[in-house]
Length: 102
Image (cartoon, rainbow, N blue to C red; front, top):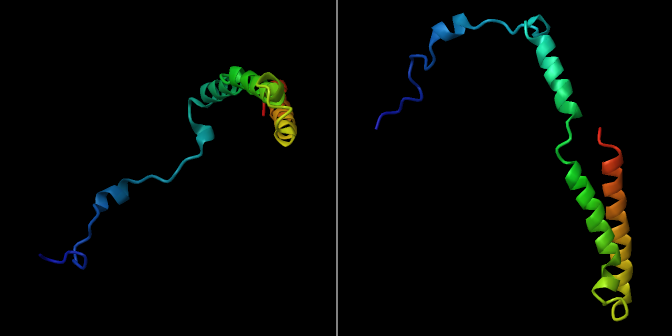
């Protein structure tokens, strides 16, 4: 096998380097207003609002699950933990629902 890593011929095409143009400012692009309008529309579309509502419901279920599944009397530490974590998850989901622009 031959070692080509130290060859004297350049590996790139010099014509490509000569044709390269300096980067232009995007503000000169003719489609800037259309791109800005599309970007603004995408910012105001909420596809995951149902997921935020589901987070609230999951948190509430986690908070009441010790009484629904009937293990609140046998495991009081787990009951307290589920209640605290469930309420925190529900509060987080409520925050996501009420502040959709995040």
